[in-house]
Amino acid sequence: MSNVRKSSSSSGVVSPTGSGVTGVSTRSVKISFANFDEHRKVPPFLNSPRSLEACERQGVLPEELMFRSLHSFFDKSVPEQVVQMRFDHYEARRHEKLSQVREEYRVILGEIVRPSATEGNATERSAVNSVKGEEEKLYENMRRSMEAMKRNMKEEVEQILLSEFKLQLMFEVMGATLGHLPQTLPPRPVVLKSLFNPAHTHPAGREGQGG
Image (tube, rainbow, N blue to C red; front, side, top):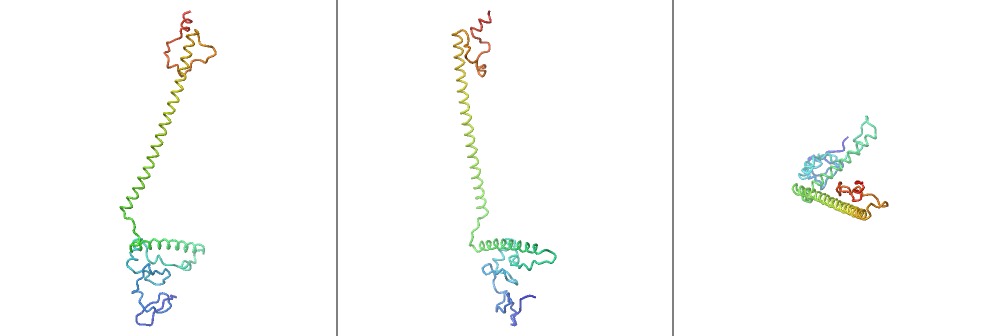
């Protein structure tokens, strides 16, 4: 049985709490988020224009913001655990909606200045550009590092080739002086064979061929 009782006065005032006559019609009282009572039993739950506008902007009905007892979810066909889960889910969603609508209400009142779409897009573009700039800087640093590594490797290879070339020239000079290559010295480096004319032979070698 409902706890709502009608006043015996001619005004027909309804007491929202069932405790007696309020003396003022509930329709004449502005109910906004400033005096919102989530335990109110009878409508209107909200009736101020800006509060209703906040609900409309967020796609929320005022009754979705009202508290419901665990008993209101009772169903004989489902276990108590399911009833508890339904209650918990409803409460979580209700608090989430209430938070969103209250914030929207503050925006309407001018207490919160929400960035415009243009400002939001500008901020987003700035963030994207910042990320792109960091990526480009990273790629540029990587490119420079790779080029430096290539230069260092090239210089090292050139130094190795130069050293082998000098060693080969020394072999040639010793061979021309002694008439043959020293037996204790290593053979001509394979990597330098292309640097010399294949038809070129040592004088001592030509003499041996002529014999």
